[in-house]
Image 1: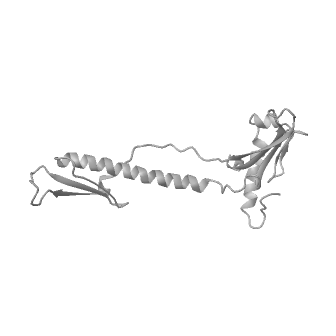
Image 2: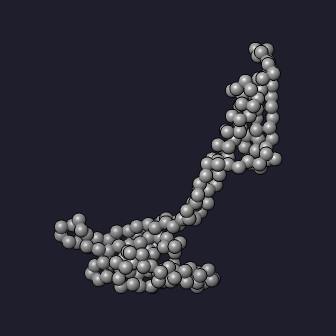
Image 3: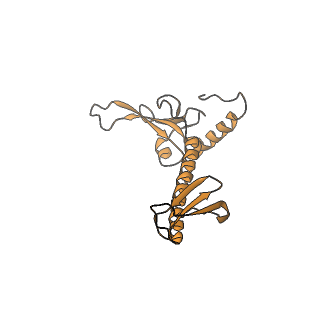
Length: 185
């Protein structure tokens, strides 16, 4: 379906204009894969360095239970620390939760960057048209890149787009050959 990406133009008699004038509308179509997102982050213990520091100083009353824990995820260099609890175990759990949140945030940024790379350049919606749907004065759907046409817009609106998809795939494969592609034929 990625060949459907681009600007689509619709020409029709506006149902909202009581003078019955012709209206042209544009829609930008963006085709992106469905990505499953998970809030779970798997962390291999061998990828972690855990540092434990004991409280000290003149204004501090150190006990065996007062520890600051810093966890470093070695592959990314992301660190998280906690000293809010009086237990080393609880501080480690808190630091691990912070680390997981930071790793999840990084993964989401990377996923967003991949999705952004798949998006079209945008540009001027009135130029670079992919397809025109004309309902007045005649009825026709025409792909402007491939010259593929259909005389029944209603069928195309109802999902009969296989001919357009096949023509678009052929057009795209021709575009990957040097000096055979033009953006609009």
